[in-house]
Image 1 (cartoon, rainbow, N blue to C red):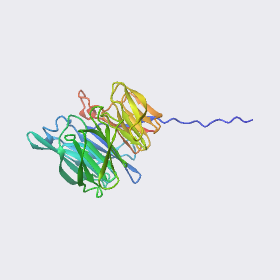
Image 2 (image 1 turned 180 degrees about the horizontal axis):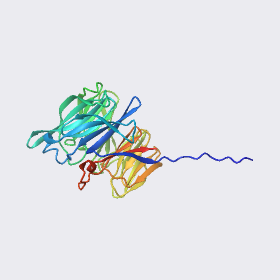
Image 3 (image 1 turned 90 degrees about the vertical axis):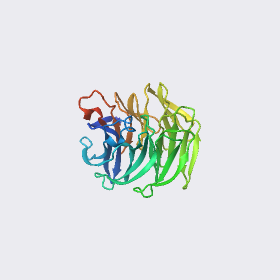
Image 4 (image 1 turned 60 degrees about the vertical axis):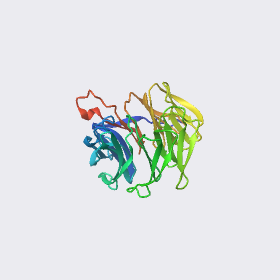
Amino acid sequence: MTKTTKPKTTKPALKKVTTLEQPNRLGHVVTKSGAHTLYLLETKVSDDYLPSFPEATVARIAAYDLSDPKKPARRGACDVKAAWWFVATTEAAYVLLARKVTEQSTVMDLAVLDLAEPHAPRLAKTLENVGAFGSDSKLPVLVVSGQRLVVSTRAEKNVRVFDLTKPLEPKPVGTVDLPDTPQAAFADDAGVLVTFLGNRQPTVELSWAGTAPATRELTGLGGSEKPARLGGTLFRATGDFNNSLGVFDAAGKKRSEKKLGPTSISVTVDGEHVVTFGDALSVWTPDVELVAKKNGVEGTHLTAAGGFICVPQRPDAKATDKRKAFAFDLWQLV
């Protein structure tokens, strides 16, 4: 009898494909017509300085061609003074900008960048005063769900909603009052999940069956960490000292948890996997099976799309080369 051998299976691995040594704070990968473009927010000023000196803050959204991920080619860029945060779709980038009104008052404007030519972003429109500047070095709520943009500068107990039927002309359609000031948010086509500071206030889900938003509280899902959703399963960091990845059903009932270690973590999805970032950069299946893990990764934030994971490194104040002080790592699951 001939002995048959099972084919070898190759376990996926996380691979850092490049490091971009620029003053980068945030990045998004956008896939259009099979091509990948990485958009980076390049700025040297931290959130702590924006309220006092927005007029002096040089910033831009730069486009990188990822045809060769190991050697991203920097193409065009669009200056967006005092940019704080942004989100990108295939049609447009939506950028929050700080604008000083008086010595004591700073408001946030929303710049809309046209991405029709992926490598040459250009300013299409600016909407003034979409919220007060409420930064304490925390991230704003700026997410896209279907044809809606949801914005909160974390200065009030609400979010503002814009219709994106015309992506370059966001139309304000209303404000949704919330039980507390938003802390973080996640969005997909099903809706928006909003969390709040502390563990007592449940996560609120916003969804749209028609033009008016419907809200519901996920009573079992509290905490301030940013949640994520993949299919009918919700994921969130526990936020305590011994962090774990909490797994919840669609109603917010806890199913299980995976230990992650004593550091705060970020959770996101790339459409197929759950990606966590804390003591290690880890990739999980929707059933919370660990696919790949890389220890020793440091950074401040996490985005994932198009097969790429984007991680801005922690700024190094002691770096003699300031380009390396804000380096940006690009990873792939291969």
